[in-house]
Image 1: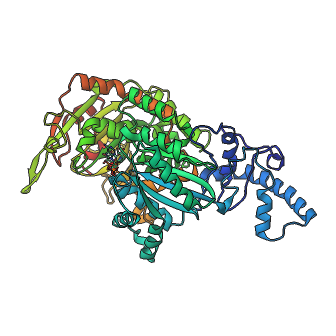
Image 2 (image 1 turned 45 degrees about the vertical axis):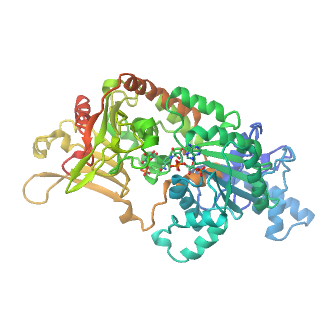
Image 3 (image 1 turned 180 degrees about the horizontal axis):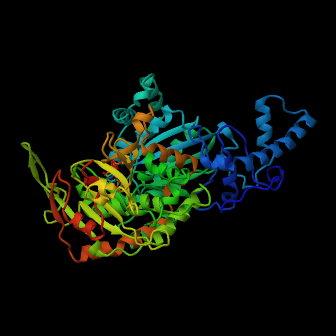
Length: 608
Ligand code: NDP
Ligand code: BG6
C-alpha cells in the first residue's frame, strides 16, 4: 500500500519532487513515493508518468481530500516564498516556481518526466508492426487516443519488424485500418493525416542489438533532447519476446525517463514455461516495467464490474454463497480459428480464453473489497481468489472440437480442415468447466465457464443466478420450473453491452399470472457515445503507468497453477474432444456437466 506524504512532505527539502502541471494527477503524486524508492536498474525506468486529461480516475477522487489539503499547505508555503522574493507573477512562472520547490534527490541522469511538463516525450514502438494485431488493434487504438486528445503533446510512434517498409508504406498500411468513431466523423481525414505524420518505421531483426541501436538513434532524433519515455509493445510471437526485450533493453531503453514493455499473451503454456518466461524477462526488466496485457480487462463492462458491485448497495450484500446459486462465464465466437490455426493448435481454447480472459473476470467478480482502487490493492485481492480455488478435476471439464458442416447450401470448414492444423489434432476449440472457490464467501458455489469457437453466436457474458425465494408465496403462479422464477443478473460484455436483471412481475390484468421481465441497462440506448476498444484503455494506461488492468506475475503464476494440472492430464490422457458442428451450440456434454452441479446454462433459456 502506498503511503501518503506527510502534510509538510512536499515542502521539505528531503522529499521527492512533486509537480503540479496539467499532465499530472493527484494520484500520481501519491504514487511517486514508493516507486522513487525502487532501485533504478536494468532497463532504465522511471515510474513517473504522463497523465492524460482522458483519465480522471476514481482513486484520485477518493484520495482527493487528503492530498488536496497537503497540496494547499505546500501552495501556501510556496506563495509566501514567491511573494517574499517577488520572483513569480505569471502563471507560467508560478508553475515553474512550483516545479523547482523540491529538487529531486535522484541521480542526475534521471529526470522526472512530469516535472519537465512539455519537455517530455513518449515514443511508442510497436515491435511486430507488420502483423495482424498491430494493424487490427494497436494502430487503430493509438489513433483513437490521438483523436480524443489523450496522447501527450510530444509523441512518436515507430513500427519495428523484419519486413522491409518505408515510412510511407507503413503509413499506407496503417491508414487502411484506421476508422473514426461514429460520433467523431468531422475532421477525421485531417486528424488521420496528422496522426500518420507521427508514425515511422524501422526494419530490423528481433535479436539484433545493432538494429535496436539504429532504432535508438532514430528515436533520439524525434525526442530532440527532451526527456524520453519509451513504451515497447511486443506484438510478436512469444518465442521471440525475450530476444526483443534483451535487444531493446540493451540498445534502445530510455536514458533519462521510463521504459515500459507491453507483453501480449500467451504468457507461456503452463506453469513452467510461464515461470521461465517471467525469469527471462526479469533479466532485463523490473516487474514494474512489464505490462502483461489481457485485453478483456480493458473491456468497458469488465471495468464496470467493480463499480456495479462496490458502488451499489443493492448488489454487494447479495454477493455471496448465501444468495448466489451459481455464476456462469460464457465466451462464444461464431467463427473458427481461420488464419490462426497454427498458433491455436499449440494452445487450445482453455489456454486461449479460460486461463486468462474468463479467469480474470472471475477473479474480479469474486474478490473481496480491496483496500483502495490502487492497482496493488486490487491485484492483491484477485490473487487471493485465484489461490483459494479448488484444483480443477478432469471430470469437471468437457472439451469439444468443431467439425465441418453444411447449412443452407453453404459449407463451413472443420477445425482440422485448416492446412496449418494437423489432421489428427485433438486440440479443443470448445471447453466447459466447473470451478470452485474454497473460501467463506463462495464455498460450494459453482463457477461455470464455457468458451468456444465456431458456435452459433458471438457473445461474452457473466450470468449470476440467484437462489430461490424461500417460502415463495407465488410458487404456484410461476410455472413448473422454479429455476425459471429466480432472479438472474446478466452482464453482457459484448456485443451490445448491457447489464440486465431478470425479475418476476405480475402480468397486467385481473388474473394472477407471473411473468419474467428485464430491468435493462442497454448501453447503446443509454449512452450516445461509442464505447472505446479495450486496447485504447490499456495502451493509455501503460503510457500513464497505471497497472490496475495488467496482470502481475503472482496472478499469472496462480492462474497457471490452477489450470496446468488439468491441462496436463487432458494432454496425457489424449482426451478425445466431443465433436460439434460449426455454428451449433456446442457439445451436449456441457449440459451434462452443468446438470451435475444443478445448473442450467442461462444462455440457452427460452427467453434469450
Ligand atoms: P503475427 O503472427 O501476425 O506476427 C507479428 C509479426 O511478427 C509478423 O508480422 C512478423 O513480422 C513477425 N513474426 C511472425 N512470425 C515470426 C517468427 N516465427 N519469427 C520472427 N518473427 C515473426 O502475430 P499477431 O500480430 O497476430 O499477434 C502478435 C502477438 O499478439 C502474438 O503474441 C499473438 O499471440 C498475440 N495476440 C494476437 C491476437 C490477434 O488477434 N492477432 C489476439 C491476442 C493476442 P516480420 O516478418 O515483418 O518481422
Ligand atoms: C484473443 C484470443 O485473446 O481474444 C482469440 O487469442 C479471440 O482467439 C480473441 O478470438 C477474442 O477477443 P475479442 O475482443 O474479439 O472478444
